[in-house]
Length: 264
Image 1: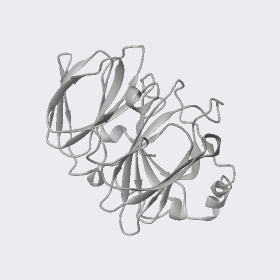
Image 2: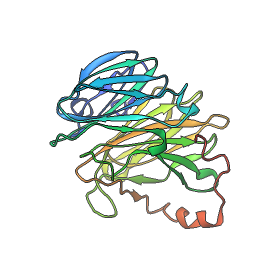
Image 3: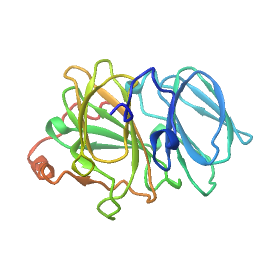
């Protein structure tokens, strides 16, 4: 489990080599920096503060939010083989995936981000779709999720580790957590002999190479996590745990949690 759950302060970035998978990488930087996208496409997402990005003779201003709980996200998609510099007041997440084709930069504004209220009862959560399957990227997918205190998220537990479209596709995934308290993360795979339940806190990162996964927010504290995903297919199709999939039909008899959306 130590290789899948990375504690705040004990990691800087995850690469395909360090994670043991093919495409996905993820990091969080504070303040200004310069880098290169190399052989991957990336999305820069301010988690706090304003950000200015320069690349390829272009310049983009990404409006700031005091924290992830204080506003909708901005994002900037940059293609592979792109040198860039960032002037930042706070934290910036760098989500990336190896790719073959070079595309054009795209600025994603808050009004471009689709809000989805998913689930019902105490499994209601808010999904902000930043880089959807329809987005002009090759492999990278990005969403951020807000879970009200005491609620379950990524529920029912689901997996995306078998290529069986359209119902399921293979996706590598990271969960980056922000919370003033803690959450509980469960990851299990009978096929891989894995069954772990961990307490996750602010700044922790969970790698999900396979298996069913779900999250629960502590009572009294809302939870945020940023999901980066990548695979061979431009899809987010996943398979529910067959023993718990029935809950989706039961949601028809429940109202969504009125606290959601948490952020507009």
